[in-house]
Length: 395
Image (tube, rainbow, N blue to C red; front, side):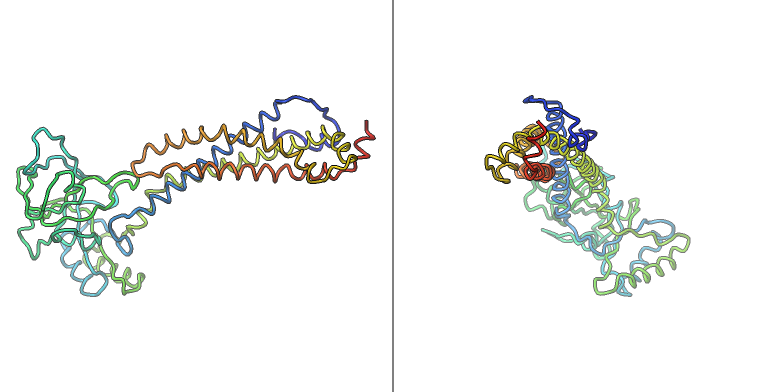
């Protein structure tokens, strides 16, 4: 349809064909059906991304850094932590077994008092920490306290659990209760609100944080001081790391930026959908413009007679555009179930998802209708304003 030449129509090189359904009309319906499906898909994808981005992560991302534990960092961790806190660069520092933005370690070997032996094993996301885990991350403790091996040496046999774990385990008054992991009895000293580790589109798993010195620690968390300029804090922190770990660069990552990468794939999908929607709309408009020119030429004598009989410009424009409105409405009616089915299938991959609203399809339909009217209005007005003498004389 986009290859259809309006200029040739205006020169009278095409003849009228009084058919209810023509290939040109059919192609316009198909093009606008695809356009509405893509517009709807783009809107739903971006709504899903925005909905998930606004989800509470469960911890404070602002001014939170991660740094890999490499070289001499583990050996000099206490000195690095002391200098960062003493110089006012950081307000809390903790070492963890893994990054907090990637769910890479889990266990299903936990047991507890009232657990049914036939109960399906629960898969726990697991962390290890020597202390200040909740404080550094900005977690909200709903019961108990943080792990602290310095002030509480017995915390080497202690754990923190998230609220999802408590609910799954059906524990009442969990503080002080014991659970068993690898045949070792561990005491619950704290419960914290859930926070997102893996995909923000999925539900949060039960989580356990072990207090221990005997673990592979590969990650360091640093909570920068809110009262200090960011650039100055980073420069001062780099000096400390070079002092105690001179063989390795200061290679920190902002947690909020790492977390933001979780949306990259969906954002690319949304951008591609928007691009294809735009291209489809342009192609549809070209086809619609050609069809409008063809139909205006086809009905030029009818328009001339109506003008002579006193028809107004408005009524003539309405006469010429109502058929295009009908074509777009048909396209919207076809596109709506297709778009709903496709996006519902896409959303099924996410546990944390939006509900598809009819308003999205209504907006896409109105937008398509507006685009169609804007496209054909030029030809409609031009035909309505044409001198009726010329069209009738050509007979």
